[in-house]
Image (cartoon, rainbow, N blue to C red):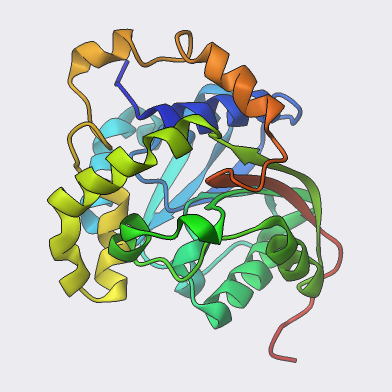
Amino acid sequence: MVALPPGTLLQLMYLDERLKNYPSGQFIEIGPGSGEITHRLLQAGWSGTVYDLSEETIQRLKLRFASQIADKRLNIVSGDFLASPLPDNSIDLIISCMVMEHLDNDNEQKFMFLSACCLKANGLMIGLVPASLDYWGIEDEIAGHFRRYNTDYLLSLFQSTGWQIEHIAGLTYPISNILLPLSNYLVRRNEANKLLLSTLERTKHSGHRHVRFKTHFPAVIKYLLNEYTLLPFYWLQKYFIHSNKALVLYFEASHLHQEDPND
């Protein structure tokens, strides 16, 4: 068991709970990072394809999921989801974590359209995005973000592109808010040099960051930071699920009708 940041664990715990509502099938994941969500989907019986821009991330995923790739349960694509050949109306789940904020307005619209084209009629989109513009900071800058989200923005975006949000929840409050000053300090100390990179390069690097006590922890920390020790914070997170101060928004959405945004 790898030690993960508390905010990441709280998001994964919520995702695990929500995935129990849906039967397994075929998925597409965009921006898998270290593969924590990929792992959970595979463990739950899903099969699918992941897309990532970073060759370093791709190689790490190939090592981590070598057996699932050999069994043809997982396909790993090195490239841009927005520019790749995609299946038509055959996917049960489109899922992304901390991806949409990397897209400019035009590509955000394209992402919505292409995702709809991939999904079956009863398919689902699940996403996690950074929330609350009041907390825009150094981490958004070094990761190449274009925006942070709020509920009104998401509702408007999805409605205008033919989607309907079925469920939305604010996550990681208040623990991530309490830890934010320390997080910003660690990011600024370790990653401020990334501000010299292009937005695309910052996006590529965002999937494999290594900041001690921010994104990576000594192995022994897993006995202090795990799904059992964080249960009180998980229930606190659920109590504040509608807080506009939450640093992460989780959503589930279905598509109502396919509509090309260029028409």
